[in-house]
Image 1 (cartoon, rainbow, N blue to C red):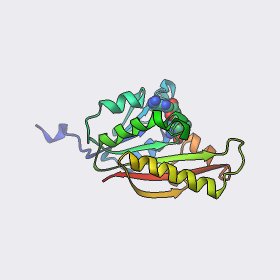
Image 2 (image 1 turned 90 degrees about the horizontal axis):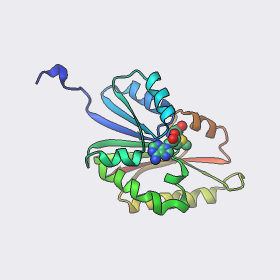
Image 3 (image 1 turned 135 degrees about the vertical axis):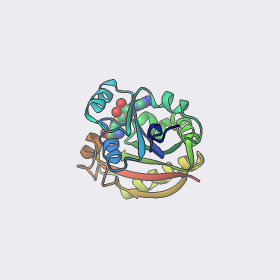
Image 4 (image 1 turned 30 degrees about the horizontal axis):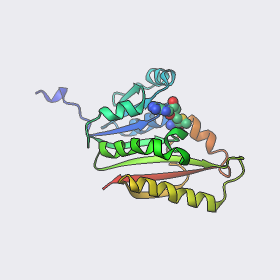
Length: 188
Ligand SMILES: C[S@@+](CC[C@H](N)C(=O)[O-])C[C@H]1O[C@@H](n2cnc3c(N)ncnc32)[C@H](O)[C@@H]1O
């Protein structure tokens, strides 16, 4: 086989619910040897991202990430990113319905591999979120992901500085009422 037809890419990172795709685009631009796959169920956002992002190492897939991820071979993906997943995939009250999906994500990760999750807590009455509430929620989230087989490699309040998306930029403008948490969840 000729060297020229063998892709140079060595890693594969998948973004779940990539929205406008700005996070994916920024990461892919800085890291041309990694393949970035963005999945979103919103066809219009996918079309817009496809027409805007002209990088050879970016692939946009329009569809449900549950369907798409289930088709990846086990232990084939280096990293997943989920930035502000919809409540259906992170809300405390819906844990029973979403936790099997992250178990699948865990199965698809290579060893070592990791899921970076950026998520938020808000108060039902849109009051500021207290430190106590934030801490309890963070511990609950960590315990859920531990029970799915992940190891917490890092956790911190806020979101990665280099990440920017429409939703993130909005949420960052109200840090008292929308408290963000970033978890790096490894497959050991
Ligand atoms: C709150 S938005 C966050 C979007 C983006 N990550 C950001 O930071 O701006 C959640 C995204 O997940 C997508 N989404 C929700 N359920 C999905 C599913 N089952 N499969 C794929 N995408 C989904 C939505 O269309 C939406 O773009």
